[in-house]
Length: 174
Ligand code: NI
Image (cartoon, rainbow, N blue to C red):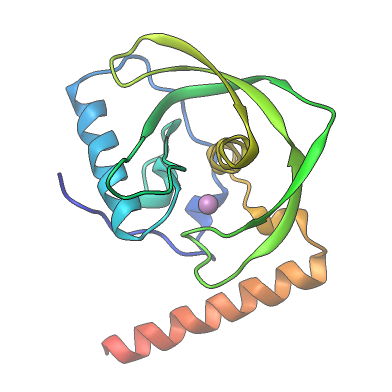
């Protein structure tokens, strides 16, 4: 297992739609293991493959609080089959937009159908933070970032600042 580099916005790849996997193989599991490692190292509670530059419909999530008792969930080709009318607000951040947070309103419950680590078709009912996290990660697979739910003014400001930070880092490397 090896952690990979996380792609930071603005980057055109983060706006691309990821493709489904045809089957779950050892290579898929290697990718999932690397993604989990990358997410824990960051640290974060969710990561989509596109965030490490791989345009596949694969996400990992772990909303457990304690490091000793980790509860990773791997989702391959996840599809939301139900969302509640009732919504909730969570302060969201994203490993691809480091340092920025905003309250985002999403359906509080969702049902998601996916293939698990072993390629088995599975369905999960999620609520609370897990539900928000799954919806945030599935958005990544469709090229959507949480800032897209903000006003254009706020979104542009955040992206502009991130762009400037990236330039500063490039300069430092030179
Ligand atoms: Ni994210």
